[in-house]
Image (cartoon, rainbow, N blue to C red; front, side):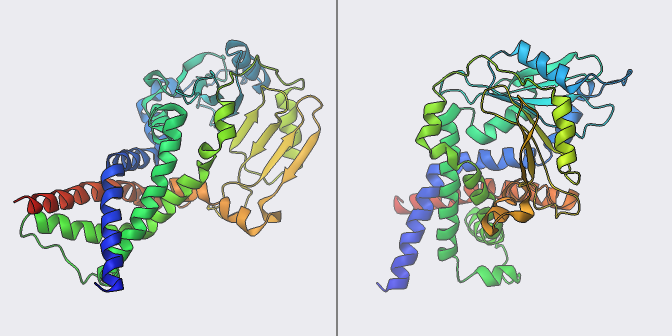
Length: 367
């Protein structure tokens, strides 16, 4: 047996086992990821009655809303204002970072408020459907709703998909160019030829996208492999320590410190050692670079602690700043989002056709 044939055989064996072990999970990750590409749009369609408000007079101060949330949820690790660009008719949405000290739960919550009346429009943990299906789906995509072990599991499956892609490339390396120039077609003879050809063609076209999507997913969640992170999750969040200074005042200071920042996230501290922070892209910056710009404010003194610009950072940090946009497809408008929905469905299709190929091989062996 020559070396090339031996390598191909080993790659095929590894590719098959990786697909069988992780196929169902990759199918779930792909389906949920495709839906989450249109997270905001779908959520607003499903919950239009809750997320659309009637402007009545001036909006309440962000500081008063922040302190109301802190009062109603006295043990938070932090709060993030998710839509600081909210239109006058939009409810304010906040992510609640919680920690109940249990590894079996991935402690994220959310709350939507009427900015004019302060009324709570919806509220819940992301493990519960009452927070809205799309928010439940976020946590499912991150952790399969299995807590911190589920987060690690999703991270590991990012690695298995990368390995599956590499071994798939080894197996089909002779067909890659032919598929890309449309010289390989599907033989519609029977389910065996259909599944085989479909798996080959879809696998080649999905090659680059799978590497990008699953590597960025793995990289952003690699903290789940850190033992110190697990240890922190076993300690319940202590009572809140709210900011001494007004968050409205700190927001003005932060904006003045980076006038060209397009604020996409506002972090509101609830624990000692945490800063008030705004972050987002800067004007005239490529949409691919969503991360890397921020201003941090000391919540006890209101002084600027740091101003970070992506342009001043090193090459790797600039590359990392693209990972979130590359993972969710938020950098190119509607055409890119539609492409990402299709790409997100490909791992599931590969899992199904791969399982059919495996079943054909098993049947052939025992008949």
